[in-house]
Length: 148
Image (cartoon, rainbow, N blue to C red; front, side):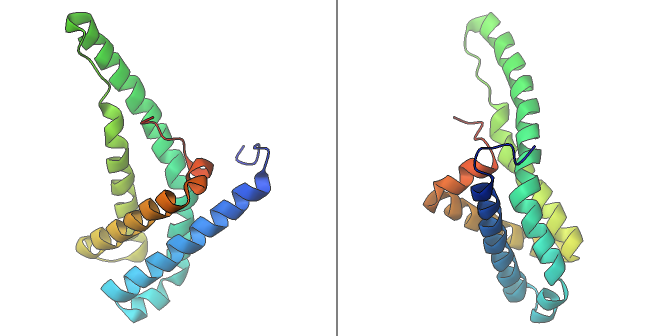
């Protein structure tokens, strides 16, 4: 299903680039925040987390977005029936759930404290944000933006 696009090679290249960038950032974050030994010991987990972040997490966030969009639209339509002032605000919670999922994955797969996992997750998300700002072509390969 993922390779039904017309340009599967570009999709695979985008996944590889994203995974390599996220793995490098995760490795450097664990190296600097936790320890050099932990970064070397958990290298395979770092690569798995990077692949999860680039491939699986956008799919999960898109599914959460569909559910929140349906719930928010129904609540907004109820409010519109009352005083014509309803708007779907539930979709703004999608990045929060993505952050929490990534935080839990980092904490349990890297076997680190919550505080350390929080900082590592924030660093990874900032790098992903800047990566998608500088290379918006990559974002279109991963997940549709429900906010536009």
